[in-house]
Length: 386
Ligand code: PMP
Ligand code: GLN
Image (tube, rainbow, N blue to C red):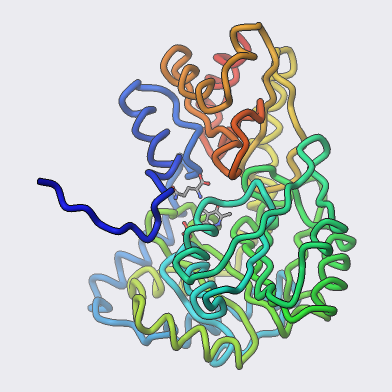
């Protein structure tokens, strides 16, 4: 007889990223579904990690991360975003942004608290809120022009609202917060007891001369927020699972209380490797936007004459395509359609409904363009032929 467990997450199944990656492998399809680069981290970085391993840096790192590493992170934060952070008391290295988000939510959310998220929303937020005993309150981003209805956000914030989670550049929509978005959020937060958790894992991928504005740049928010960053996105090493949390000293003290019992510390060799790579004078982070902008443009140019509608993409490494098409296609929901495309056309994507609670049919699919140019062209050719 199988064991019946009183599940803490009764409505949660396998994540869409696992589902689509498995299907892509099984079907030998191009995988533009799960978001990860098709290319390696820079060779110097790989060498630094190898050197760290060979020189014996293989034991536990200090709980918040090596101080010398946090000092390099603080320098980058200052140079690139103008954020002034104390490496000793305001930066905590964590094993990837997913863990960082989880720690932040566990630190702040108590049973009965409400947490507001903007939907479509990254899939890890809601289960983490549920595990902390919180209640998720959703506000839907307008799927026609991707604008955020700040008046609706305002109307849903009340005395129970503990946290508002935002994500810029946005996964899956590829939108980027403007100064006006931040001002609107800041005004709402000033009149509440809420904190802001800002998921900025695509902070170095902003296109068309746009600028990433971090929550830490917003005067009214910088002392009541947590910023989440991921090295996996920035250095093409999603498999290493390394990121960091930035927050004011008192918030960081609370975050560390939780984090020390979740993982205690993270991968020592990756920390050494990335620290040394950060010390090389280069424009890696700045060049990343140009690098991905070219990939976005290549994908879009090759889709110009297709049946797909290309929605705007201001940042991240995701392009949303809208389908209308034949009657047969319009009968399918976006999940069924993405499965069908993987099986028949041999190209895997992510249905946008996977980021929504009750939306079966968005007619939107997300494609990851963090791929080699040949793969991008091959994918676009398949999509054009449909
Ligand atoms: N937040 C968003 C919006 C993401 O897209 C991802 C992963 N792609 C994460 C968090 C998790 O990042 P990590 O792999 O560093 O855990
Ligand atoms: N964040 C990546 C994406 O959006 C995938 C991460 C994961 O597989 N959990 O595709």
